[in-house]
Amino acid sequence: MESEKSEKDLIVDVKSTEVQIALMENHRLVELNKESSKGHGFSVGDVYLGKVKKILPALNAAFVDIGDKKEAFVHYLDLGLYFNSFDEFVRKSNPNADLGALFSKIKVGPVLEKEGRIENVLKPGQMLIVQIVKEPISTKGSRLTAEISLAGRNIVLMPFAEKVSVSQKISSKEEKKRLETLVKSILPKNYGAIIRTAAEGKNAAVLVAELKSLIQKWEASWQKVAKSKGIQLLFTEYSKTTTILRDLLNDSFSNVHVNDETVCEETKKYISLISPGQEKIVKLYEGKEDIFDHFEVTRQIKSSFGKVVPMKQGAYLVIESTEAMNVIDVNSGIRSKTDDQEENTFGVNKIAAEEIARQLRLRDMGGIVIVDFIDMESGEHRNELHKYMQELMADDRAKHNVLPLTKFGLMQITRQRIRPATEINTEEVCPVCHGTGKISSSVVIDEQIERNIAYQVEHGKTIMTLKVSPILGAYLKRGQSVLSDKSFLGKWRKKYKCKLELVEVTDFSVLQNELFDEKGDRL
Image 1 (cartoon, rainbow, N blue to C red):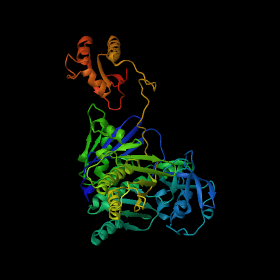
Image 2 (tube, rainbow, N blue to C red):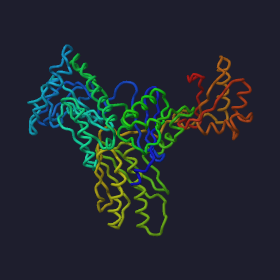
Image 3 (cartoon, rainbow, N blue to C red):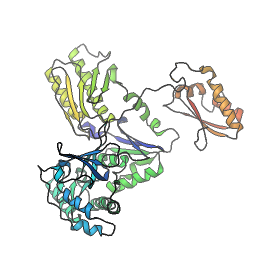
Image 4 (spheres, one colour):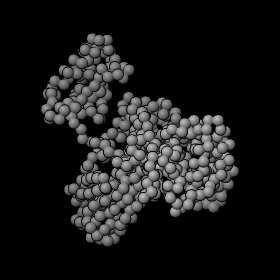
C-alpha cells in the first residue's frame, strides 16, 4: 500500500513546561502529542501501587485510589488470570525480604475464575499493583488493569505469566519457532512474553538487550512496593517520544529532529537499543527559528484544528464534537470539476475520506464518529468509498471499526478512546486590541519599537533579538534585506550602535512584537 512507502519525520519541540511531538508523513502533520515536563498526568501505561476504595458488586468492579482526583476503575475481568500471584507479592514484600527470591518462589496461579465475583478477591483498603489502560476522560477516572505488561519495541514483558506467544503477523513458521525458543531460553522464572512483529529477523543480541532493560525496569519498582504500602507511582511508560518511536519506527522513518541536546541523546540511546544502526536518523536542531515554524508544523496546526477544515479544490469539512459522539459534515464548496455530478460527488467524498482519516489521528478522536458524506446514487460508489476509508485507516494504531454507508450517506466509525481528544483553540483574542476591535495606528508602531530599543541601549543592552509577526516583519524590512540601511532595522542598528536581529514568529498577531536580550530573556 502507498502509505507504507511514505516518508516519516518526527519533530520534537522541547520547552520548559512541555514537550510537543509532531509526526509528519510526506511533510503533512498526521499526529500531534503533548507531554507535560512538570508534574505527572496519569498516562496510558503508567503503573501504580493503588488502594481499593470501594467495591461495586452490581458492576463486578471496584474504585481504586491512585492519587488522582477522580477515582480509577477496575473491572473483575481486568484483574488478569494470575492476580493472586501479584497480590501475594504485594502482601509478602518488605524492606528486609530478598525480593528476587520472593518473586521467583511465588507460584504462578491458580487462575481467577472467569465467572468470579470481585468482592471475593478485593477488599476496601487492599493495596494492589495496577496499570492505566485508559486515561481520565471528562468526568470519568482512569480505567485500570492488574495484568501488568511492559512494552518494548520487539517484546512485551509479562510478569507472573507462563506463556511466550508470537505475533500472528509473522508468517514464517521457522522464524516463529526461532524467536519463541530464543525468548524462552533467556526469560527468568515467573516471566512470560509476547514477541511483537518488529522482532522478525532481529538477532539474539538485540532481543536480549531489550529484555534485560524491561526486566530491570520492572524489578527497580520492587523496592517502592516493599518500602511503602502507600499509594504511589511505581514507573511510567517511556516518554511520548520514545513510545511513538517504539510503535512506529521502521525503515520509512527518515528523520527525528529534536531541539534539545539532552532529549536528543536520550532518543539516540533508545533507538540504538531497539534498532541498532538507525540512531543516525536523530538530528539536533540548532536553528534560530522556532522548530515547529521551521518545519511548518505551526501553520498546519492552525489550519487543521478549527471547526471548519479546508480541503483541496474548495471542499471543506465541518467537525463538531459532543460528549456522546463526533459529527463530521462533508461539503463540496464551489468545486465543479466535471459535468458528471455523480463522479464529481464521488471525487469530493474520496478527498474528504483522506482528510477524515488524518483528522481522527491528528485530534485523537475516539468513541463514535458519524460522517455525513455527500449523497451518492451509485451503490458501487458507496461500497468503494467504504473500502477506501478502511484502507486509509489501516495505519491507525487505535482499534477501530468502519461500517458501510447507510442509504442516507452516513458512515459510522468507532475508534478506541484511551485518552482525551486533542483540542487546540485556533481562534484567539487579539493581544493588541484585547477584543475591542480597535488598535493603535500601524503608522506609529515603528516609533513604539524604536523607543523600546533606545531605552534598552541606554540601560546597557547592545545585543538584542526582536520577535515580530511575519506581516510586521515585512513592514520593518520594507522589502529590503534586514542589513540594508533603507530598512528600519538597518537604521536602528546604525543609530543606536547595537546588534539587532529580526525573528518572525508565525504565532504572533499582526502588530505583536517582543524584544529579547542575548540570553533569551524578554526585555
